[in-house]
Image (cartoon, rainbow, N blue to C red; front, side, top):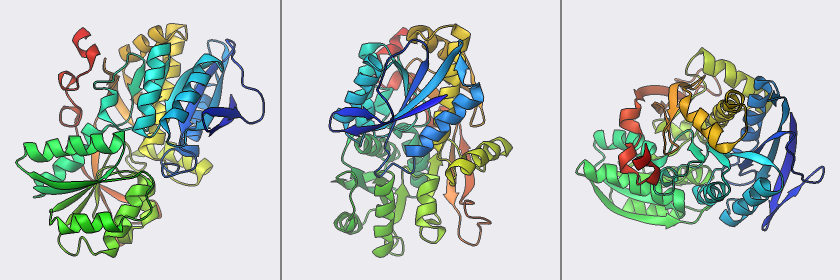
Length: 401
């Protein structure tokens, strides 16, 4: 297995260590992630590592061809992500793109993959529009989406009495989709949305936004953001004594790396939705230890999802006897997904992987037994409660199923 690292600059991807090339003698995977900004911990080098682990575990070759991994930083910019995808698919021989956090970038890449009949395996982006109105026969949303986050975390908060909400929302596709999907859960239960405030991506100071949320008197402040923005939001809430004043925080998208960064002293009591936690069972612990030995931190659900998606993709190539995207996608949809994070999952016609989700609560410092012992399970939530019904997403492919 080979790894080539790309860096995004303006509208292009520049190869380090040699010239880019297209070849039909390799199977090439392109890991497109945030390497340097607010999502670097949840995706970044860890996503590249998870992809490499899958390739190594598969054996490094498929159909007698070596498997190569390349990686690039899309800088959370849709135009940069699109340019990299165009170059990878057109001239660099990339067969499938992996991960793609930041929904606005993912939607741009999804459009490229659709036009070029190339596969994209999304683990990082959350917008439910990826498998909704913008669904593609060549895209898979592997790990989670905003509908799931809204119905598991948001639904739990509403059932606990949180019937009035104010949203602090990342001002791009992901944040707007997460607010929309959560607001629908709140209003369907008879609750009210008292207001919202859009916040630029990668914002450092949340003071003014938190004061607006506090002044709204909403019972729940919904954080429709992720990564560094969520960490900064929660730190700001602690500074203003939000929870001491009686309001609840809903971190609608939290990762184990966020909790580790915040510390249990700050984050204890928060609830979060995830498709994977490293300490779920013997299989998750074994795989996570291998990841930890390389990265010196536990994996996020995105990184675990990258491994699963790549392994399923490579097995489909082997079974189909080809890298042809249509035949490989048909094989992927026809084959149940079984690995350390998924049991009898399946890829629906709209691209959404059907799997359970898990609602966890962040432990108190006294409950934790080790550095990464951060969460306790509240509930396992089945797909019937956490996955949007096929006929409700607006996917044009749904009528063909």
